[in-house]
Amino acid sequence: VFGETYACFFGPEYPSKLCHSNRIVHVCVINPDDTKACRAALLSLLRIELESYVMGVLPVLAEKMDAQVSQVKFREYKSRWGSCTSNRALAFNTLLIGAKPSYIDYVIIHE
Image 1 (tube, rainbow, N blue to C red):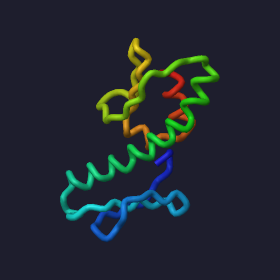
Image 2 (image 1 turned 45 degrees about the vertical axis):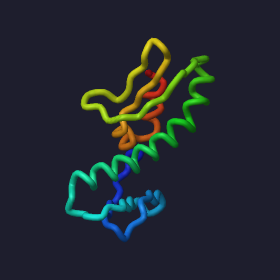
Image 3 (image 1 turned 90 degrees about the horizontal axis):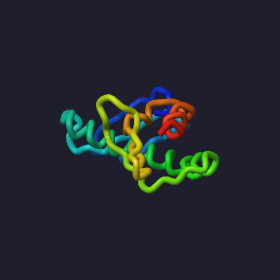
Image 4 (image 1 turned 90 degrees about the vertical axis):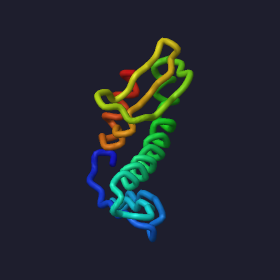
């Protein structure tokens, strides 16, 4: 997360949350052996974290570049970090959360 390695724990006893100070991710899943459920729950948590970061820096970066953004979406792509449409809608890869903040900022500016 944000270019750092985090320990990840899956189970019903964990409330889903990221703890940046301890670099720990807790993911609430009923069956920790269900890899699809674990992956989906982890991606959901990481998406929320990425949304929070992007929506915090996007207004500042857009103002500096005198750019308008009509919409922002987050999804998982196989081969791109982000995209921009002619209608000024931005889309970002959820897996971008693994990059350092400066790299995320670069992708935002590029799009």
